Length: 357
Image (cartoon, rainbow, N blue to C red; front, top):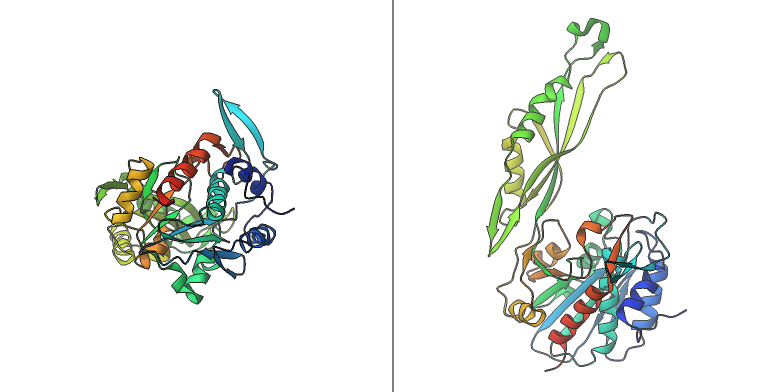
């Protein structure tokens, strides 16, 4: 059954949430989006795998890019969606309602209806956001068609409770290692216990005081935490290796090299291996279009503590913000649910800003 983009954004949310599209299995939903968007005469449509790009070409002086991912984390008995009521407020419950098919539904409806917006718009719906970065549809698209990212401002429909969250923190993972000597545990003094030697690593983490960092008027909260620890060979063997995986969320005032140097400094004297890192994004709220956007939606901007794909736009010189329905604390939660009122409010806000004056 084709998507009916004349339905309300809340109704569209339920429909596209009920089409399973766990990362790696987005094709059915991508096909349905493409089949509908490709019929719209006011849009130039391009497809790369399960990523779809649709653009107006009206010769406007400015261009805005609006993007959303169509994949979800695995379903856990939370599809099909259902309508529920909490404290007298209607919600849509189910996988993807928050992260981030409600935002995608708003984007699809507006893409169909905004035939002559006051700025040119590039709409992006992309695959593989919830998995490794090298699989991300935007990563792939940036390699093959970087020109499609061109714009003066970008909006990512990540859940933000219907508020505007500027930029995002950077994200780094490191492995901090200790080495020892194996021995039989009955003669432990012959060996050297690598797990015991990891105690100072945990001590430094427990004593660490993360920074609050002001960047262009928004205060980003950093964090340095152990997220995994591994070591041990058998129940009667003194371990010769222990690894502590550390996650560092750092303010967008730092680049990746500065973040890596900071982590190495915290764990000075230990072997530190940086295994993954992604730079954050500065808020970019001083851009004229950003100021117009904030005024139109009546939002007080906040920082984005997590990493999102706004960083991809920022790296290409396009200031970007997060703006979408849904509480980010409920993303990936088995009780994922979005207020219908937030879906409608985000649609109104974007429509008011983008529609022809």
